[in-house]
Length: 419
Image 1 (cartoon, rainbow, N blue to C red):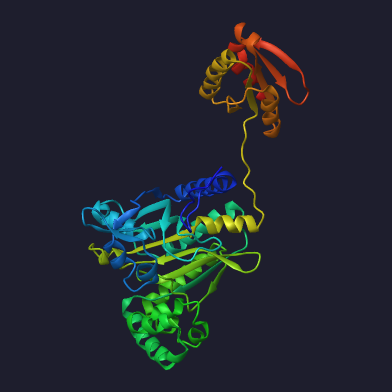
Image 2 (tube, one colour):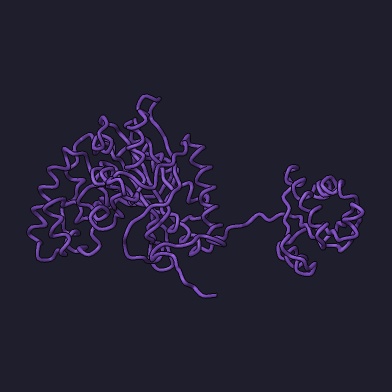
């Protein structure tokens, strides 16, 4: 068959085994998030571009290089969402959620879009599962979000996890640090990459996030030495909570994350891969974001993990997704039998008895092969004769024994055998 069209570069179809992994992650994440009192939210795939230029930051790589933005036919400047937090903050303001009991706790599982070089576990349309807690300022909320994500990975079978963590301070103590940092990088200007030479003028913290200027940033001053008393105490409490929960962490004094809205505690999750540690995602506190988008100063914290990265880690750790297959299969051999088996299938569905079928197949041999592949315990067989007499054959696939019963008794008999 000719292949005239392919999915866009960096975007991929999800089906088969990959879909099974998606479904497993979504199921586990939703279950764990709900236990901790989070509620679901879905925001539009497309937002006013200012939601991201103001929220994420005009001088971040996401806004400058990676965002899909365009003008609509009505003249609105919009962007496909590159991340989830800014849109949820916009929703919090728009729907007056600050009038509800605080904090508001949201979870989401959704696709996002960034124009970057496709590579293993990184796509231009990618999926994330995330958490946001908005409306209360307490280090225990940062620790709780880390704990929820940690428990999701544990339940998925990803055991060898480490949380890299740092504090970026608040706007007051960070101001002094940025001056010192800018001074340091100006001395090392000749060793900086072209992008970082621009960054030191606009936002020197971005240099600490650069993968090219590793040697330059290793000699840079550390933000923990410039934290005010409040920021230092808050960070200490987060670490104490993690220790209480036995969640392993590494202090990384150069961790700043790639978005401008972060303040205070920030972190990233890493899992051991076949060659090197795999970054699964991260998060942190963003107390100034809602104010940037036009709301009141509101404390908030959140995290997001990459679904494709999580699947990659599960596969590298040889974690399989077990599919629950029906124990009963319906086979039919004529048009009349097909009609009656369609009705019988609905009767099983209404009785909450999972069954499988192959109504598109006419050959009994092919249908029995499918039943064997799915390890069905019982096969219900109806040919033309059985259909006319309103009977059906139950075959025990282990013993090979068969019995002939009235079709109306099939659901009751199968339920009895499955017990």
